[in-house]
Image 1 (cartoon, rainbow, N blue to C red):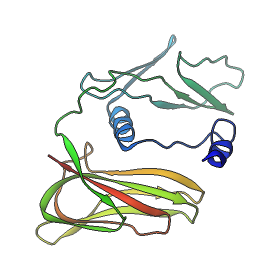
Image 2 (image 1 turned 180 degrees about the vertical axis):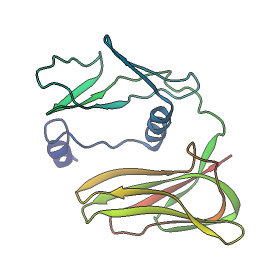
Image 3 (image 1 turned 135 degrees about the vertical axis):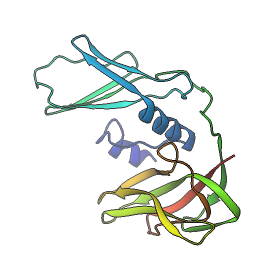
Length: 199
């Protein structure tokens, strides 16, 4: 862990983020629902009251190299050329209740295929990955009660060393599909998955 922190943490490349599943889901929900307003006085970000609070990262392009910038209290600012990444402190109410529908994890184990005892409404799949390899399209494919299959969500894992979590969601982008089986792309880097359903 010390090697990872020194190479990829604040003292190294500073491009590594790993977090518990709840924090990742909160971040995803906040990013989907955030309202961003930009004017001559700065940037304002607002979240609806029913969204769990989360820090958010904004990418700002075409910033003059000589611009004087300062992060908000508790935030972090990183600039490379004319691009700035601004990470806020927690916005919104920490621990605010998740919006309906509520979801629960029904499986945590090896990545691959999971067959449901009975059809369930699938909210999403959380995939944990570790290591290095070629660029890989990670897919969550689902099979409905009628036997038809479709790709629910995808994510491109870059050609780089990485350790983290990928969220392959149905919610909140579209209604949760009723499925009897979900299959996640198999690869040596993908070692665990969590299956989340609507309660």
